Image (tube, rainbow, N blue to C red; front, side, top):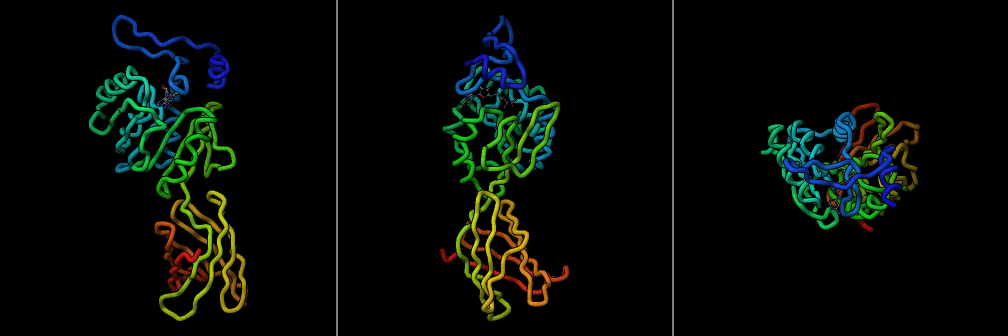
Length: 276
Ligand SMILES: C[S@@+](CC[C@H](N)C(=O)[O-])C[C@H]1O[C@@H](n2cnc3c(N)ncnc32)[C@H](O)[C@@H]1O
């Protein structure tokens, strides 16, 4: 079984047990871990993953199963605050030493903990290099994170929650997801500047949305519906077939606010409150 897992990890052909040798602890690629072995993500891919997640100063980055700390350290070098969650205490101590040597000890933290028992709610960005079944075990928790949280996984996807972006570096894939706001349901839509109201119906499958707007006795199908985190966009066509673009923001899944533009010019504001 261990051989199979190691082979999955980008062609490594054997695993060697971890060993502390005389002096400083040195992890070995393929050494056992609580739920998954340790193999580090190559630096070039780490940079690409952090690019995809648009990691910037002020972000709080969490690496789940942080190994020797290389992802939190790289994120901290970009000015983010970063925490590594790692079950192996030797790897935790090694990460602290490496962060110190890299000059980012003040922006990094390494915690000896089980990633499945860790509160993830403060993260702006989550990175992971785990296993398919571990990604799927985490998925319900990830979907409850604040809309807009970016999740990047090296190698393994999340089945029918399709990624928002992906990349390949030296044959190794990585995937990005943006946690979508929960917008599926019925909404009463109104225009604060006028009396007109409408009913917006949205169906949602992860970040994919579709639906219609019932307004002025007509049912208008939403064109190009798009949801990214808490940002939403769709168009409806008027009787002259002109597209009206609705752009808005979702607040705690119960309210949306935005503007309507026609021919690139903002024409009015809209608000929506959830009715179902
Ligand atoms: C494949 S390595 C990835 C290391 C690092 N994230 C990277 O990409 O370079 C997975 C790491 O998860 C750790 N790990 C395994 N199960 C864990 C658990 N339940 N909680 C925390 N860490 C765990 C392992 O010790 C190992 O260091």
